[in-house]
Length: 288
Length: 339
Image 1: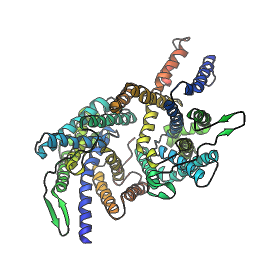
Image 2: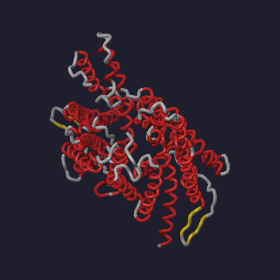
Image 3: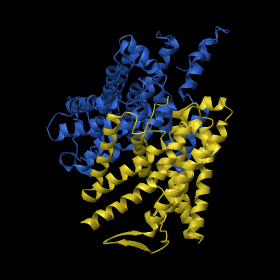
Image 4: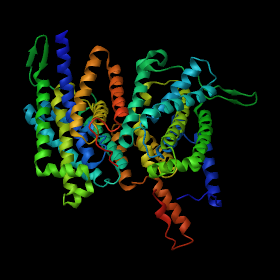
């Protein structure tokens, strides 16, 4: 039984890691741009397909392929900012619809380029850590390490660099930030690059574990929405805490009952948090 | 600004033409398009009732699940309790309204994006319950062999509702009556209060409007009509399952509504009709089935970039241009365009 519990903890930590990457990206985009990026799950999908292309097909080393995936998906994010979110900046519902359009385009391109079936990505390494009867494969460990490192770097960037200050200023009050001489366009571009790239890395790192398919983003985006709501929209720390909370609850309920019950419990958890704290765990105030 | 309520001769002619088109259209299209026409007419009710809910300024993502509640309710009333189908449909719609009333208590503690996702969660829980519990909801397979609408046989006249053209007329009547009710609600004191809460919720509360009760009322009315649409849907397809009411369907309702525009009652109708024709008729006839979602996505993006106020803004501008032709120099027109 302790082994079994430990195994579930390992599984939950893995799930928490990549969900935290995705949710933090989504929060960053919402915070700075004020737009709900429905295509975020498809950016995750694009990251996974970058691995299919660069690693499984082209044969580049795995981590080089991950880096290329990061840049590629980040550029997709910048493309979205330039073509969709910038012209629709005063129209959040319009941005939502445009991101749905973008989502359909990305899905179709994945189908056209790679086909409908799940892609097989060869495993990177067979190694695993064994603790008693429980084990954690290196592939999953890499995901956890990558998450911790990337989120630490992001935190330092946001707290310590001048540009991080500008980004947070924009998230707090766009007009006031612009009055201080901060370029909204430039900040939005960076936020979109970082947010998208985080989702891309999550997709790239998990690609060998999940067998990418064109519609893999769908389940992820729903979970990501739940997480950012529980954490409080606009709060990066909240997103991380909520990702861990949600992943542990969901993994444990899945292990002991079944997946559908786990989804129901996850949603009930979220409703409960919202009823008690209508602005999420770490939410400060409602953005108009 | 209030629209012109009196109707000129041109309006009367327009309504006559529309009536002829609505009556003639099932005889002008193929069988599969007749089936599409039934679903499109049902979807018109779904989007117009959705717009009523959004009048209070809160966007729900539970609307399609409410439609499902009506569909499941009506199917169960008819199949398990032996209600006659027309009665079961109304009972199903009432069920959806009651569920909405119950959900209002947790949901309207939230606002904005929190309400959007909170309503999604509440709806999703309901949908997962249908999926998880085989008794009485049938699990993932849903409910099958739902009784159809009873045929009318008066000796000299015999109407069989398994024929999509006949079912279309039934749906058309139900939808038109519902649209009229929804229109009257919007133009009434209640509808004006919805608008007041949307644009000035603190101010309206300060003059004694109970914002919570009006938000709840809008949600309940919208859910009742969504449930009615769901019931029409269930007894037409004779099967319901949880996947029909998932978030993908909701996203389409959202797309139709926003692309059509929400400042006028006819905006969402324009959206659902135009996008359905584009997707199901034009794109299908080009014959590039694999690329269809891509083209649809492009059309969405272009529509929202170039018509940010929806397709209705074209109609509003055209109407203003026509009205102002006689009296040039009156600079109202597009000032009344938005809000």
